[in-house]
Image 1 (cartoon, protein in one colour):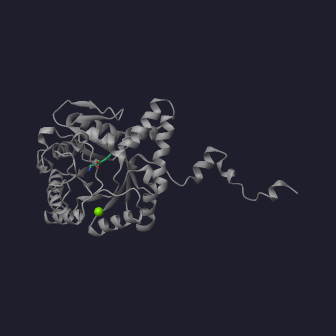
Image 2: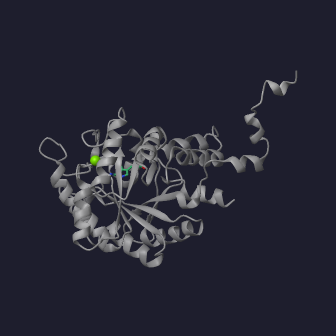
Image 3: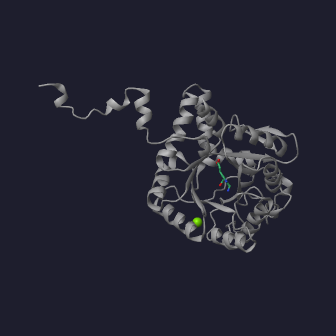
Length: 332
Ligand SMILES: NCc1[nH]cc(CCC(=O)O)c1CC(=O)O
Ligand SMILES: [Mg+2]
């Protein structure tokens, strides 16, 4: 009896050559899947390294325009902006968040003028602007007050829309903010401004390096965001949160962090079938970079594998600090 009678199916047959593997590949990563998060400094000709994110720099708007042009050349089509607010502009009421001449608003106008094809995403949340580093206004006990915070988020989102942003991305996790922002945008005639909702955003310790980068780590001290960001123990709740944001008018939704939460990405895509994005956050970037620097992981291969995993899980796009590096690798 020949061996093949016992093995009618040989899955390895399709893995033998590069050509066969490419024919049956189910998922592919494209540069247009990558959303590049950047930290914006006030002033001009300013460039600062972020120690806990090797290779990431905070840039003033003039340098950011050059960075955006280079990213566009590599095939990247969208950027997410995070302003680094000087301490003296932070306050209890976070009014700098909706200053028409604030860092984010100024960057949106300048980038849109220099490179209109680049989609711009503006973060809507108060943590870069509050003196305590929480994402909203607080009461005497330090509890983040939902509805009063939403009123400020509306003003912030409108200021971004007025500056010409393509997409506002509320990352604050207040209840009802998507509906409130959508109403306000419609009222003001911004019917084309998209909302990418950070719908399933977890109270994660993987955000540490980001808080260093925007300078909110010192403000928040030992505090946490567990009264509004989600409990990492929960999965059904993520689907309920995402469904609510969709009902309220979100155009796209996000799961955050990324790699430890790919099960949530898959559930979102399978159960709700909507444009789904995931954020490979600062802590994920930092731990990869640490392993690359030690020579424990191969940089190029691991970057691409980590991002392809998001596509396999069902993500339509990925926010990642590796965007330029990955786009360069994809270009070959
Ligand atoms: N609302 C602020 C915000 N927007 C994006 C991130 C984290 C991104 C990252 O870690 O890369 C955070 C931090 C936080 O919620 O504390
Ligand atoms: Mg919600």
